[in-house]
Length: 207
Ligand code: TMP
Image 1: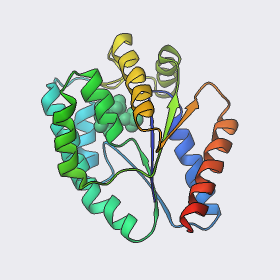
Image 2 (image 1 turned 90 degrees about the horizontal axis):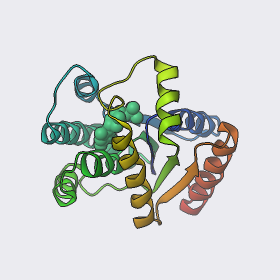
Image 3 (image 1 turned 180 degrees about the horizontal axis):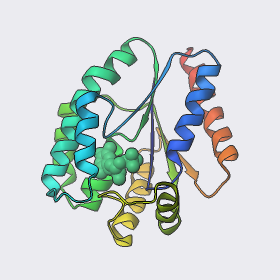
Image 4 (image 1 turned 135 degrees about the vertical axis):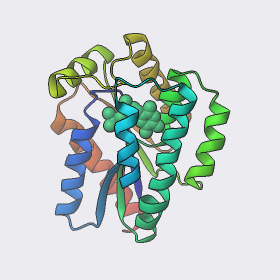
């Protein structure tokens, strides 16, 4: 089973993925936690380069680096884990590319779809959890937590607003796999909703 987490910077998705991971592990499930960009040795190496705020990276280069990371991640981590009947929790996946490189950077969505299909071999999440959150609050939370801004975080308000709107649009277009949650609710309340949804998905799949 493949579950992805999405949201703007500081939305709280990483906290929620960690909580769900611990919950599923405590119930004895074979679960792995991974992330994009990253998830493999080469992916983590390229992630550092991609997030470095002192580097100038053209939008098309950015897209291709992200897709190169995904190609390695899908082949080495995601497909083998799904084949082994593991539950895969992934912090961001292809919806982030439509949101950031498509709606954020302005790259044609059809081009993204074409390259994405090539690198993912058709892998689509069974469930995508979108934590929707206010842009200003998210960036402030991120700044408080880490004390610095990476190459994406340091983009202006209008960029991040486009990302938030894009995620909401994507969730409308793919209602069958999206669960949208209000990131201003308490961590416990959000975790409970996620747990309930994942439990029922596990039951429905007979895992
Ligand atoms: P993170 O801060 O959630 O770990 O994500 C790192 C950054 O990578 C985040 O600012 C969004 C960006 N990103 C893209 O621009 N496109 C993508 O496809 C993915 C997976 C991430």
